[in-house]
Length: 315
Image 1 (cartoon, rainbow, N blue to C red):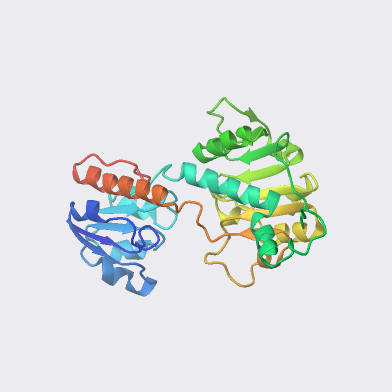
Image 2: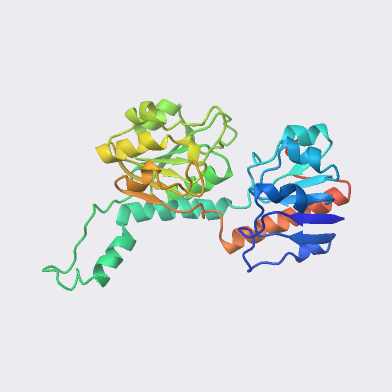
């Protein structure tokens, strides 16, 4: 079997091994693949592995040898799954590999917003403490989480993991989720969550029904001084509306690991908004998380080869 990995660098910049794929077939790996080279690089490969390189209907038409598509991620919007289904090509993804990593990172954003640890460390190194008249100083309000309410939008595995951490900090947790399959949380309407939450954390998929759910109208229903976190998908929020609310003081602080266009563009309004932390889509990227992703990706292809495909998203 010929296997091609179109954009392997973000999954494995050199600290993991591709040996699992090599054991299955003849493997070719590209760090990145521009759109103009997708067809050429796939060639007559039977198994195509992609992360963010798009596989459109035209690609499938131009590469009739494709028998399998593996996505090195949970989201699969980069692949035309309908065309793949019509052609009998299974498309697999990697579910739940980054649950703990993303939950931990969500709290890294929140704790940084609550304590500005990086800022205060920089201030000490700039001699501000040395010159201080008192034994301590702080430049931002220091926020205690105990007793506050965290509202989680999207209560899947990551949302549940975030809830466990929130409860460990003494927070009250409420959630909004269309399918209420887990019973260990108080489910509320979207509007009630907006009204009650001191911290709002987004962990829902990007769907037509969720695109832009955080906008000027929903922001108006939030508490004054709310903290907003997004480590899910950038387009869940209307970035200009969030920036305006930050600058007006309606939202106290925002921490995002994702934006609507990635890599971020210089005109993104969050870049110049007050009290906004932006990280470059790295919540998923701990080595431990990527190793789990690699193991499942190899297992997915091996299962296909054995005639028992798993984690197929286009059945």
